[in-house]
Image 1 (cartoon, rainbow, N blue to C red):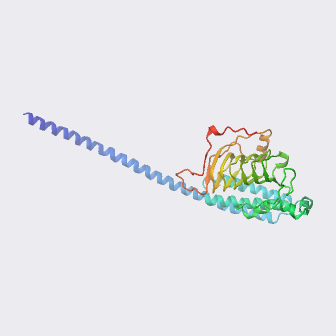
Image 2 (tube, rainbow, N blue to C red):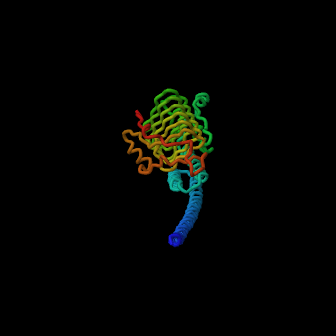
Image 3 (spheres, rainbow, N blue to C red):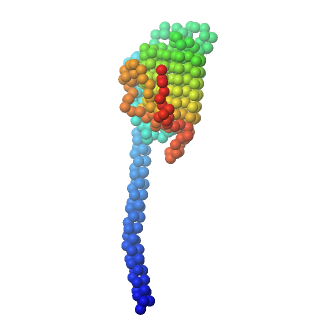
Length: 346
């Protein structure tokens, strides 16, 4: 009797387990179906995102090509300040188009657009120089040796159209500008404290080159800023209306605010940044970023003059042209730890 009872109990237990296993089948099937549907939805969303990006990229290219052609035509036929101002206005529109498109453009397309914009900005500067009175170019009568002693080397990597600006001589001393009226800066200096005020900087192109152990303070609103061949320097600059370009620098500290920032062949440099588009690094190492913290009297006025949107700061959104892996952080740049951001600027 006991053996019969045990056998019956075993049968009942087996039946219960079988029923439980059968009850789990629909649950497993349902879970698999949910996972399948989620995967289908993910793929669908990915395709839609790719289609949107493709459409946006096509719109960007078509708009950029059209506006670039319009600006080139204005510059070719510019015989008055009014025509140049119209070209400048459309260039600002191109700049905004690039800024609004950085989140979906491929790195190559973004670089091509920025370089084309830089060439147009340089061409605009050339046209402005051509419309200025001849007396502004009195510096050309100086001796050949004096001019060549302060000549700035054209930075590799800058579009050829920009070289015409860089070929203008810069002063070896802090006092006086020998270059065109829209260019100012410092070169070939060591262990100096250098400053320029708002009246000297407003909408001008600032060129700084071959500086070592210098502190440079730029109080005002330049149009562009280029720093090349600098070592162990501290650069503090007010809001820059368009672009900031760094090349061949090392062991520097910068505080800059701008529309776009590009860094090339630079290492071990800290940048306190306010930027409305993505910063770009190329052939760099040891670059650290933190939010822009420099301040001075009248900086609010300079921000208003620059046209920069102070509420928009992409200081930690950086594209590394040497690091295309999206799922891994670039080893060439990093965020400066908060405990290292407390810098006494003055």
